[in-house]
Image (cartoon, rainbow, N blue to C red; front, side, top):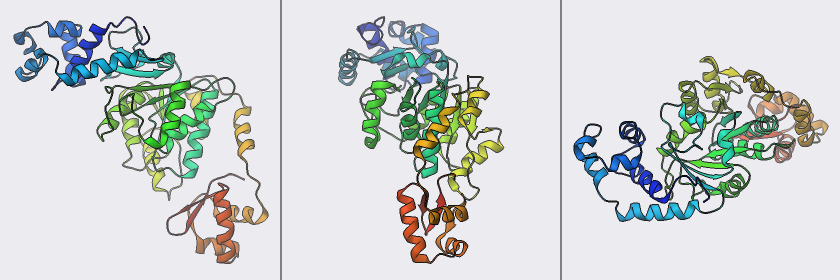
Amino acid sequence: MNGAPYLSDDELAAWLRLTTCKGVGNITAQLLLSEFGLPQHIFASSHANLSRVVSSTVALALLAAPDAAQQNLLDATINWRTQTDNHVITLSCPDYPRALLEIPDPPTMIYAKGRLDLLHSHANLAIVGSRNASTQGISNAEVFAKELAAGGMTIVSGLALGIDAAAHRGALNAKHGYASTIAVIGTGCDIVYPARNRDLAHRIAAEGLIVSELSLGTTALPHHFPRRNRIISGLAQGVLVVEAALQSGSLITARQALEQNREVFAIPGSIHSPMARGCHSLIRQGAKLVESAQDILEELHLPVAPPNIHDEIQTSTAPKINATAQLILQQLGFDPCSLDDLAARTDLSIADLSGELMLMELDGLVEKHSGNVYSRCVVI
């Protein structure tokens, strides 16, 4: 049978009944498993014995017969795991990833779609950051992910818009025979969220792995995402934060990584950018400042990526820049600059400057921010 053949339908039913029982969360489920063993043993226990571990109300809920919703979920899950490359893994399964057993709150069940071997990779790096990332942040995430994957790492992220999606894309486009990524999602494994990433999700399922601890049919709710972040960091040796505001969810992932004894890396940015403040805060707290993929590979004591990879990326993406654009880039620098200030620096008229900046924005050379403010996106 596809998807963990050592887990029978009856055993799967018991695990689902435990994890979907009212009043039983992940920690309570693991307390019960620690006390009684497998789920079947829990349900065979008396109310008195169960009440030694959980409240009387929860004990009664555990002893109640499965309701129609639980039976429908079981039927759907049994059908889902018979499909190609769909897997259901529990704490009792040999395929349960060892890395997650090391964290304080491992998921009781894991639903996985794709290459199950990636759960056991010994060289994983999580890349996280803002959903509203800058053009430069998107580029950084893609390039780092591409180089690290080409160096043999599996890139873990959360399939969100912005930095997450860029990291997955970069990993999938890695050269030199490597292309691996894991998406840890905040919905059931049968739901794609956000919908804009549907094509990317399908590609990850075909070439990488999608993972969730949430039962099938579970929709996106705000509290799901901070919880799934512990799995993102837990599967990885370290976490790279590319761009993050001070209140970013990415900082939650970084904090959880530290609690799990994982390395934390951060890419610095402009002191004027609010999207760099989270990274700067992490660096002040001891995160390792990185400027290249090689910095991470060396810190994790992994073989350094082939030296020509970065050159290939730079060469393939380097745009042709005319003399006026070169002048603008030289005067613009990497810190945001207003249109008026840039006109004064370049001695160009507002009309000429605006026209050239529009073309440069289309070419990915500069990024426009609110209030007619620009920043550059390339090194020349």
